[in-house]
Every structure is written in structure tokens, then in C-alpha cells.
Image 1 (cartoon, helix red, strand yellow):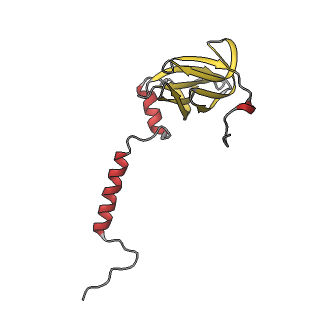
Image 2: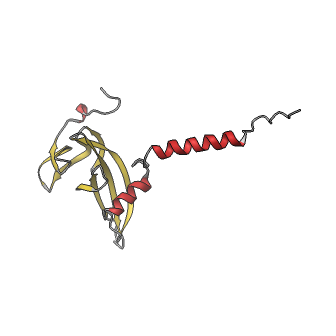
Length: 164
């Protein structure tokens, strides 16, 4: 007579089959998303976007722009200048190509990138491009994210959550 398996115990062959199927599903899903900070830092380092003489204080994948049918990830990067007597930061928005190469760098001081809708990047605070007027809180991208113009949109008209 065969003894009944203990309750709560999984037979090894079922467990091995389940693990193999799970491994195939994970590998078929492709590379880790940019929400994986290690992958984002690796992409920025590989493109020489990060300065090794500075300390990386913050990096995040904000959102993806949709420009001419392709996704362009937007990264928020904040580096600290080492050896400065008072803390100094170098902040910038980095727009990456679909292949994760930098397409556009936009320095900022106190502003922050918040969200994307289509080819528009909404900012907390107003910026000027290349220190030239006009000033605005929305960046509009075109030409494979190489060209950008600035607009001012009232915050009450933003497409924020919950959506309208």
C-alpha cells in the first residue's frame, strides 16, 4: 500500500516543471523595465551620461514620451559635486532613445519632471530652454525627441490622476 503524500508538500517533479515554466515566461518577457533602477543606471553609465567625479544622488524613470509612434524614456538625474564646501547639485532631465541612448539633456535647478502625455512632458515649475524666453511648464518634443519647445499650461488643465 502506498503512503499518501504529506499535506502541504509539493511533489518535486511538479515543482521542477512549474519553476521551468516560470523561468521561460520571465525570460520571454524581455529585459527588465526601466523602473528597475539598476538597469537605468547601467544604461546611463554605458552612454557616459553620468559623471564619475560626481556622486549619483538620485535617478528615476519618470515616464515615456510617445513621439512619432516610438517610446522615449525620460530620466530624472541628480548628481552631487564631490568636495564642494556647500552641497551643490547638477540636475538634468535625460530623454533616452528607444535603444536607451541619450537624445536630449535638459538642465534644471528647482523644477522636476512629473508626467508624460503623448509627446508632452509636464514639469513642476517653469523652465527656459537654453536660457532663452519663453518660459513654461510643459516641454513638447518632436523630430525623434531631438527638438523641443516650451509651453505654459495652467495646472488646472493638466491631464493628472484621476484622469478626465
